[in-house]
Amino acid sequence: MEIIIIYASRHGSTEKAAKMLEAKLSGNVSLFNIKKKAIPPLENYDLIFLGGSIHAGEIQQKLKRFIKKNEALLSKKQLGLFLCCMDKEKAQLQFEHAYPEILRKNAVCTGLFGGEFNFEKMNWLERLATKKIAGVHKTVSEIDEEAIFSFTEKINSLAQ
Image 1 (cartoon, rainbow, N blue to C red):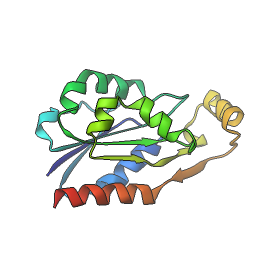
Image 2 (tube, one colour):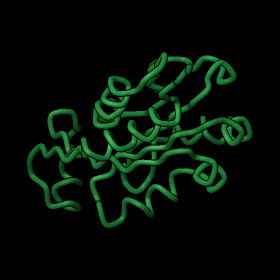
Image 3 (cartoon, rainbow, N blue to C red):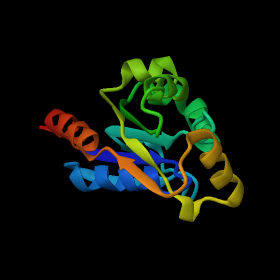
Image 4 (cartoon, rainbow, N blue to C red):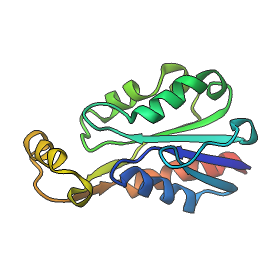
């Protein structure tokens, strides 16, 4: 099975989750940070994963544009969708806002993987906003490894 994981990561949380997925998946897995690499033709893949994170209530613009541009093709492929989001109460709503309904309905697997506030990778304005809005004053990691494991188990069972 040919698998591609396409993600956008600002401070590294989504990249960390994508690499965890890659390590646990069966099949030939290609990993692409949409902000750093051109995406190969999607027709070459049996399964496509899309992942992003929430910043100021939105998924990354580059990922959003990619989804919009490729929505017709993506809606016909086997699809997995995941999101990194620190606000557990709003995570499902953020997920629904980040991905179009047609893709959510078509997805064979979806996941909410928690997130991180990585102060070392934030600029001063992001640190200030995080302190004010989230009330967090230092780096915090709440990546949900169990959610990632469950996600990959579901996908690996489909591949058998």
